[in-house]
Length: 248
Image (cartoon, rainbow, N blue to C red; front, side, top):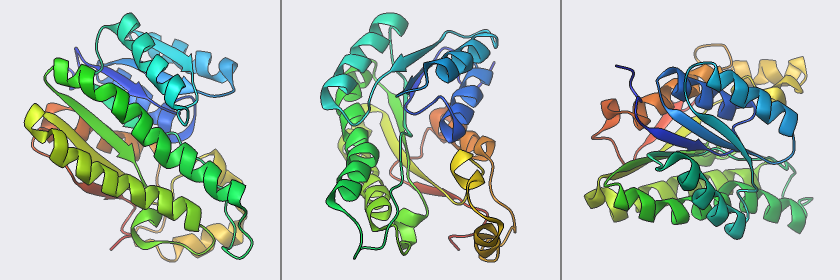
């Protein structure tokens, strides 16, 4: 039996990068997968088709996770289509890097809304269905930057640190209902965003990583499978760093 067979997962920001890797790993382990995207319908539908070919029910939803109303409607739509939500992965996120002296209010607000408020939105609306289903796993994709900070990323670090505090609080609130909530703190992972970095910047990162390489989306996805499955049934309120030793 596959680790997630019979379960339904919802992944925000699942059309590319880490989110797509998580959606793929869930499908490979037998889960039905709903995931969101904001703008690229063509890319999202391609991912949905790929997941469907693995023999599971998969569907892409255009939804802005930072919108309370859209998040509420999304949960209703997914429940109508799939019947239940056993796993929620709050993965949607952006960066708007700048030094604090130069950071605009818009850069601050946009990152907090997309990264942190979205986590509140989706979790808020999925808790009642999970309680009704007598269990669930919520996984929040934070960052090592949320653990130790980073110059030029005060907005991003604040949003990701907020996700960690949020995860620990939710774990305490709903643990008695058999609902678990954990955070994963990825290090520097190969994504479309990191591909845009110049070689000098990448080399600077690698000098601080004991394993001397960037991580892969599949390695974050593997940690998500663990936390989503019964293998992680007694793990809640924790922060799992997947960072090649960067946070050591």
